[in-house]
Length: 239
Image (cartoon, rainbow, N blue to C red; front, side, top):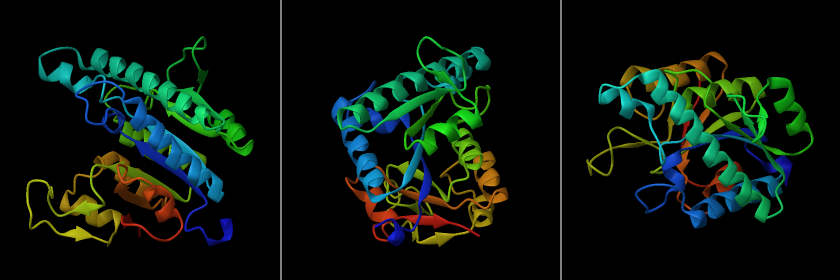
C-alpha cells in the first residue's frame, strides 16, 4: 500500500478551533477522537506523520494585544494552550493504540519532552507520531509558521493544512457563493493574491524549502487518508 501513496512523510497542521467542534470553547473529545482516527488510518497506510497543533480554541495571543495588553505575554499564554491540545490529541491517539509523543518548544519536562530536531527525528524513526506544541517557542510567530518550520526540520514530503473548507478559494465560500475553488496553485500565487490560507512567513518558508502545501477539510471524516492515497478534494500548493 505504501508504494501507492502520494506522500509518504507528512506534517499535519491541526488548528485549535478544529478540536472544539460545535462548542464555543475548549475541546470536544469526540472530535479529537475522530481526528485521531483519521491519523491512525493514515498510519496504517504506511505514512509517517508529525503534527503541529494550534491553541485558538483556548486562547489567542493577538486577542490580548487587540485590547491593549502585552502581546508577548499573550503569545506565551497561547503557547500553553497548544500544549493542552497536544496532550488531548495524544490521549485520543493512545485510545486506538497509536504511539505518540508530545515535544514542546517551551520547556516543561514534568509534562512532556522538549523539542529538538534530533529528538523528533529519533521518535519518528521509531514509528511514533510526533506532536509539536508550543509553536516556535517565540512570540509574534503563528502556529502556521511553526508548522512550516517543523516541516522543513522533519524533511517531509508535504505540509497538510486542515481547514474548515475543502481547499483554497478566491474568497470565503461561506460569505461569497461565487468564490472559485482552486485545484492547484504555486506558492507565489498564494503570496501574490493574498490568499488567506497560511500566513506569509509560513508560505514563504515552505516555498524556500520546496515543500508542497495541501489544503483540505479536516472535518470530512477519512479525507486525510483519501488524499494521501491519491483521491479526495484538496488544493495543492506547489512549484
